[in-house]
Length: 434
Image (tube, rainbow, N blue to C red; front, side, top):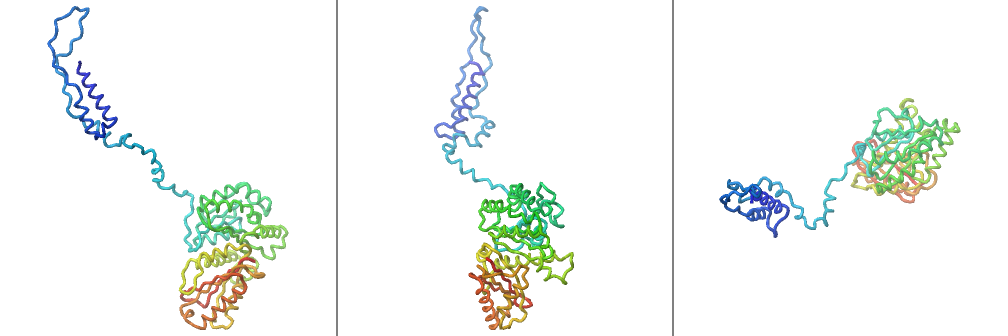
């Protein structure tokens, strides 16, 4: 046999040993045992007498064959030894599912808006529909409710200072010219776009506050998106619902039949949901003489946003006296029908009729139309100084304030919070379910 024969035989056995283990031996041991099985070449024989050319066979080389190494070279085996062999896994295929959950979850979409920095007891977002709704939504964005999205049919109504990521322009019309039918068509045709934008930009929240101005064509048609809002909340398994915040045009604006009809349509459409109505005429009366025309509506929007924010914020705070918690807040917000929200300050904390003063003050200074009839749920939140909380006569008057409001609602929620440097007792009320 030739040298090539022995070399090829050794290499074949090495390859066979590297492909599998032998009788449970380690790979290195198997390779060493395999090398010992390579046949030893026979001693060289003296050449035979020459034969006739017709039958002469090739004579093996007289040079001694190279010795077969007693151990297998380490370089080829190293790469194989370090990696587990396929046979090493045995029945691991039955458990390959465990690695399916090892990877990190897919990260948030890069279009996702940052989390709210404004303190709140509930996870919520604000959607401003149309020009008026967008301007009101900006007031919440300025407070730190970063999960705010302005939706409109024209870029011309985008308020100054609103980042592009917080604005969604719907194709199909450059405004709708107070045509509520056109507004419905544009919104309905883009409902999938709106739903996708809420999901990719806002993410998971429990409550959606939808802000719209009554009288316009886009805002007054916003209820056509209610199905998209509900699908989104169900898809993220939210615990809340949609709350509408709409504005009532001024008395002079309501003289226009188109504006009046659009407003009435919106009011009728949101009646089956919880909603807050802001009376623009009342806001004008409350702010007239305090701010100029240019700052009238921005100031009104800012004041309302801060008022609602205090309710959301206080429900997230603890009190050494009495707390209004997140479940109380959710109960009130989920009450179907109209809500009235207002606030006041009582500088004379020793008045005998403090309860009536606080309640009537909240209704009088509220940007909402006054309540009509008995409410389903109500909230009275009082903010006092440490000195007031320690005064027995003040404490008695506070109890009277709760009783006064409680007698006008089926279910009353209340809270007392202590703050420093107040001008008097501050009261905030929410009455819902009219």
